[in-house]
Length: 634
Image (cartoon, rainbow, N blue to C red; front, side):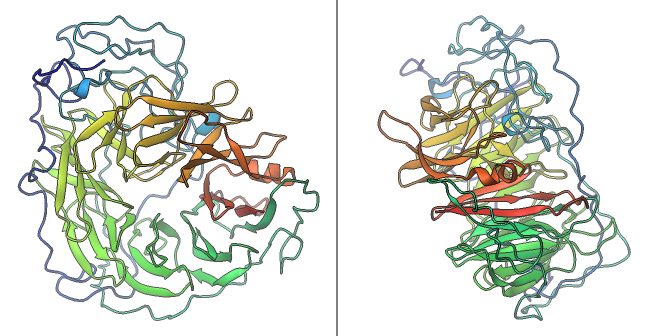
């Protein structure tokens, strides 16, 4: 349904509460941002140094962070009684029609808040709050009412999270988006009496990586140590080869992180606990000696630079006051260490207990709990700060890649509480555009950065929203149909993780999302980013779920998951034309179905005709060697 022509736009924000005054509209695309949005570069030109200097040697000590739980928290209580869905009239004030004539918002139930598990992908137990959106029951559509575009909405059934009651998501020019769990955690900075010394510009003392004697297990019976197995001995005609398989380093009983996976033309690189390893993509032999770190790795840049550089953060010590504030640049081609640095704390309550890292072009963004600092990823030189601005707006999360996106929580304890989304110039920190969300909506994830697609929730309305944005800023569309989508999203303990979702893909005009599998196979839905409407959908070719990976050569590449007795496969789906039938790119072997299916907390990648699976979390159990990485090819 479209808006009548030549009519004034409806009043109120996108998703504005019915019993609250309407907030002011944000600046329009192309207009100057409000004063205070862009901060002038700080006087310091070094990583945390007050005057001059660049990165220096890592410093020890510092206040600490709580430990990540080794196992996911327990599931929350069962769902409440059914509530009216989208489009249901409010008792005190009729809702306004949606922007650009779109139906009133998507219909779904996001995962639970911090500390509560959402439903994990494809029916698996969830590791945290940012899992898939649970399913719906068989309730009839609510009645329609004047002024609201007609779109069905049904209360969910069997939700594991608190967001169960859909709410109206409508408005004029303001995209009211969402909140993850409705909570922004603020952690006071501890003090153990030790102060971080200002870093001094320079390279790390070691020009090359530290070495390790970890065994190599290619998976073909020719390893140089450790338990070996030939996974290809019983390979059938048409099945892919197991190129190699790697076991994880020993982790403590409390578990350890294994974040990131970077694939270059020659090397597959993985971080795990206190080390970064690099393997030849064809045979799994070490490309360079293992890079060892003095403490556990706590953050990495999900992206690599154009010349194959990454940045790794590790803890300042082992006490409960240690911080995730030690930075090390690494060259993925050689394993050589580059510059080092120490992340300084910000103002009061703006701690480096936990940080997030991202790379956009040549800019490294280091996000603290309430601010961020940008550095030249090539040299470690400080470029600019993103700090408090405007209506008590504190930047709480950043996403990098094709664009640099910032999310701020504004007036968190006041009547004008809201979130703001901004695109920043990575070279200068200048605000390109600002989008204000209505009260009650908090940004949770980016399903894509370029083009920008944002997932958000409203705790009070128990509702979610997926919206896309124009390249120059401003709301473009929202998903305009009832569906239960199930991308694989990690979970964050102390701060938002905007880039923590897998199982999504996008090109210039289309977003590809997997549906939740309830009974039988799931589907991948192609969503038009210009309208928010469905273009087409395709069912998994097996009884197992299918997960979009990337768009390559005009085709969507997807991973079809294994069952208990059948291996998975990588398929290609045409994105244009009328036929969208999956064709097999790589049929994985039955000989590794148990191993393939046992990667619970995982990362997957399709690069240069090879398929990789790696663990993202180590349990620390001592009963058996844990898996780290598995590679397939022809």
